[in-house]
Length: 278
Image (cartoon, rainbow, N blue to C red; front, side, top):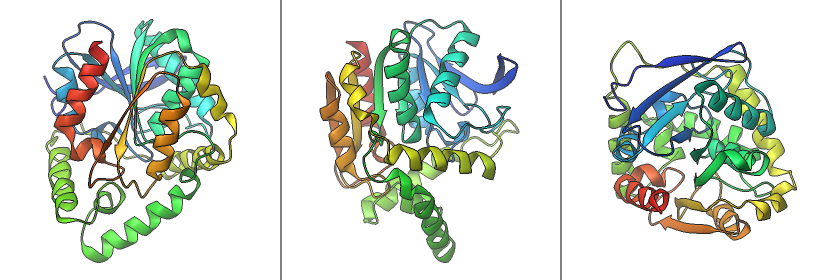
């Protein structure tokens, strides 16, 4: 079983069904993946998931109101953090590693601050600390990318996640082709406009939040990664995040943007497994 063939399951989380998939060895501390704004389970790159699953028990989840998960998406990251812990409780997981990408990286930051005893290590990709610029403009950035993609007959992720260079656009094509590999009837439900609206409200508040000082109390080792030119959430925020965390390793990938971990999937998987293996 791999990322393309793993069935979608549900678990009752305090009366609400949460959708998730799991792959991997089942050995050691589980690795839970939290995905980006507007994303559902189908948006995880099989190259990244299967690469990590070669050594880890990998669990991908749709939080409340996203994809096939029931309920209403909250408009703040504290509630998303609580939902993450409630999901772990429902699966009977005591301690996990977290990989949060983009919006998921913010959720992971809040979990590490509010529920530190439940997290061993964290990987934060394409994300930013509270108060850094970028998240509040996500809605406008998404709309501009959708319009540009429509005009050029491309996918919005060509412009949101990848550089306009030949290498960047070739990486976008390869990434999107990997996402299309899942052709079964078990594809996830696209995210609703209501859920996107709640996520955007949370992101807008995050940019004006002054709580990034709380990162100084995060004791878990962290791996912080991004492309060198993230046009969604400026890479400067990623650098700031690495500085704020007491025990952080930083990796920045060349000629890449918000989707750097997908463009450099092999490098990222190697670095992440190395980090999680320590």
